[in-house]
Image 1: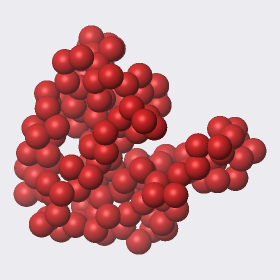
Image 2: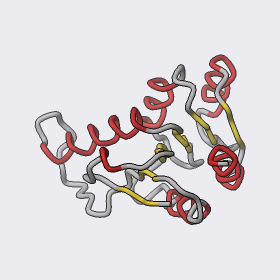
Image 3: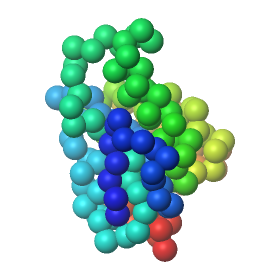
Length: 152
């Protein structure tokens, strides 16, 4: 499995492509993306991991901030490019961007959602998943198993 992070060129991604969307809140969210990468390392394809190695929290989160805009556009393009979007809501985080991503891709037919007990808006996530027929799992281990199954 090849790992790509921003600002890597998305045109170089090999099929199948999995995008790791979900909780990244600095100093709150664990590096769950690394756990998924390790769980899929023997499979063929590409993981798009938005957890940027050189993230700078001082970047202004505005459309006029070139690096911030590059990050968001990379994420949007990566989710469009992906065959599967793994969406993880980590308990103890608020994850408003992850909620936005759930809404953006609810009808796309390519989401696998993991929203464990303890996520503050689990009820909302569960209802959206049920109403739109989105595959849902309860643990990070189950998410990895589901992605392995998807990869064949």
